[in-house]
Length: 450
Image (cartoon, rainbow, N blue to C red; front, side):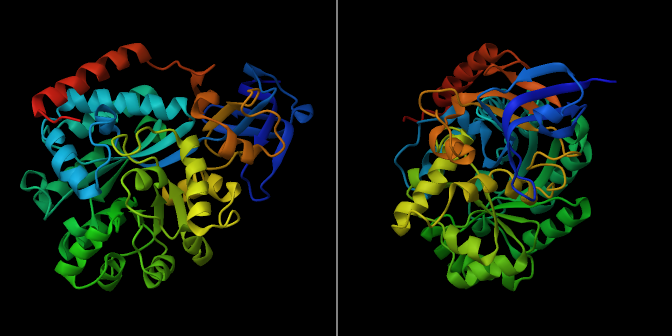
């Protein structure tokens, strides 16, 4: 009888399958890039070429970080305690003017490592700095080398940003298309590209309609910051006479491909429009809190049937990429805001970072749960810790007790990339040295002071 490639046994499995099974003393087996067995350890008939003891460990689907900007790992702490538009225009954009491929590469490598080591197997990285035309390619290179699954949302401003950031529409879309042709599906499907009109306020009806056409042609999502602050909503109203989602809806572009990132300042009417259109929302609770942007109507969106994913956002506004931390904040923010501990549950936020994330990627048939035939993207969390044990409810333990540093093993596409908490695909210390150097070089060239 042939062996499995990898077997994890004696673990607690949080499957996120249709029955939401939690299997105690469970086992999961992997062949190549797929899950081949999920069940009780006692039912496992074959050994594994690599066997991992899951005693006092929880095995979960790899977490999906549905929104980040990894180049901002180089900017942690340089723009704290500022409102969004001031943060963006006076610090982040000036720093970004000097971002070259070596900076983008170092920042993305560091971001990939942080995501992997804290349990995320998939990221959506919204990259929008193109002053060096090779920047995006070097973000993709980092994804390729570290072993994470990544969608690069190639961002573009068309109007109203600082003049240096505004791009010619046709040139921007041509670059997105070239990237999709070159990279979509590479590394056994691990690398993906999609268009990302940066914000609703920076786009025109023409740019959005052309983006929709392009996304449909290549069957990919559209990633766009939407109604993150009151000031943004007023900017859209000034130019279009409608609020953000009202305008998207009125011009006929809003559909199931859209990722509405943040979506904080939506009216009740707009929430219903989002639900009707099939568009998704990416909730970034920690970033929203740090920048003081506001609290999204997540409980209402859940009731209306909107699919909601979770993101860390960029490390210049979080200031890390630990999705296990995001899980806890996503629950606590709404409990205190509504003065209601039952308004949102651990199970709901955990689903946002697994199945819901897979759905907004249009990959729910491949990711988001531990099921036979799905991609082998798996995270193992060590729960034999004083701040977690004893465990009565595995999902509660992950959401409310665990830290990203409790991640023991991470498997992406059937390959072990983190083992015993250490990255094994590339040299982490070398990346740290690159990141220190790149970050200080960027600040020195720009003259921005924290």
